[in-house]
Image 1 (cartoon, rainbow, N blue to C red):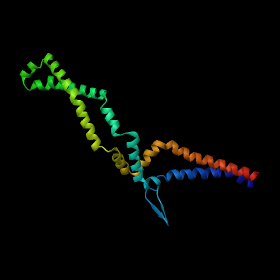
Image 2 (image 1 turned 30 degrees about the vertical axis):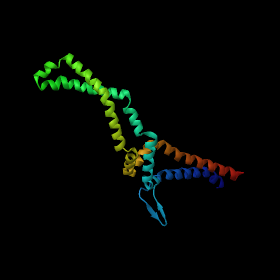
Image 3 (image 1 turned 180 degrees about the vertical axis):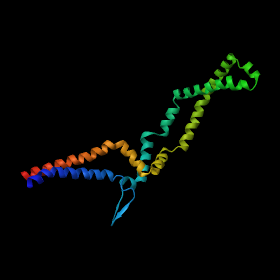
Image 4 (image 1 turned 135 degrees about the vertical axis):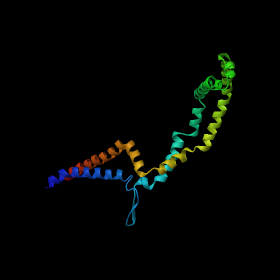
Length: 200
């Protein structure tokens, strides 16, 4: 009988360790709403601290991941400006050739290939001066109107706990499973240690 208890000890400890960690992972989110048990209030960690989590996440993303400086660096990149200049010139070319000439037949007579080429060269020079100013204005407007911290904070606060749980479990499913398994492994090791202590 004692021998059977000794053999079962590691298995029981492993089961206790696995169940304990399984419940710990589940209690990150459950219960969603507070449940009062006597003087104690039981609620999942994330539902209880959703606002604090949203605020911290917003600050972290703005500080570490994306900021107005990052956006400014992108839109002030010469390659970015050149790409948009090309798009504008392409649109203007279509406008002159296909739309403007339909307004009056005389316009088509003046806008031959040579004249159109001259106009495009002039427009290209104008865009070289205009686009940086336009982009600077856009960057300033974005900085005033776009608050990354508040945007992220508002979105996370509006998440339902089901959504947040699905997102986190989708990202960290393997890690949560590892926590459960390691609880069982550590419990099994503790059970073996108890057996050895009892035998000695």
